[in-house]
Length: 384
Image (cartoon, rainbow, N blue to C red; front, side, top):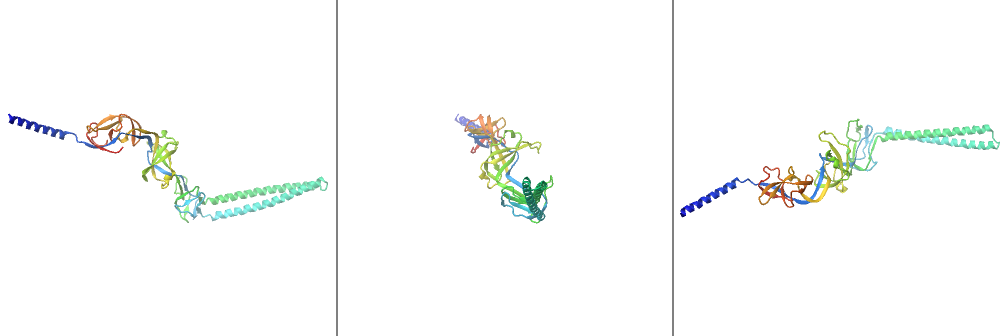
């Protein structure tokens, strides 16, 4: 009897071990997933540019002479800081300088002839007045008085004619001076000479209509910079000048700059028929932050449409269509699907209005095979 009982116990034990081994080997393999906690924090509704924007200078001019010619003077070099009105380039202009000098001399001569003619007119006027007075006293004949009056009028007309000629000469001087100025380039604003295309002795020609050519001098003022970026036409109606924004630059990848929308273009660009956009301009809030920046940097813009400071939020990457999330059950070490109601959202965080509680954990490892409702997982929690 005892032997039968011992045999039965051994059989039961072996059977239990076999069942345990079967259950152990047949259970699903646990997946290592990343979990993020449901926390309170700020959430913003934002709109971002569809393609990379560009850092632009508020003042930038591609300068070229309006006429062709040979470069005679280049008093500046690339990298120089110049003031408004400073000479940047001058072409050979000895002929035009001579024309200006000739016009000056003609203007001076015309002024001298005018003074002479007007002096004669003044003398004739006084003589006419004297004879008129003598005529009243009977000391002069009427004929002499009339003749003096006529000569005075003629001399006055001659004075006016010479003065008109002097004004014509002055206008010719202005024309000659304007022709001379066509051979010179001046800085239209304070800025840095970014590029010079040409050397002393080389010839420059103006750009033909519709055919852009490199400017003789590229002048840029880097004290004022902004970002121009394309926004999808669907998002553009929600954007207004004055809205807060953020700027990200590839050259400063670790920083994000506060900014403000300063302009929304009043038209849609349709260069790509299937991706129509509206250009916006965004300026930096703190102008001191642009000290080390250069025009031409690629930039991204994020316009803040609405903001809430303290709401329940989760990473946007944790949300499935529905919207749904996979919530971690620490007792079962499994994921369970749950529907949620969302509010404000951006690429980083989404507001949760219903369906989750603070402290619960959701997975963001949605791209792993096998991550689904009921999946057994090994939790790897990250900071919110």
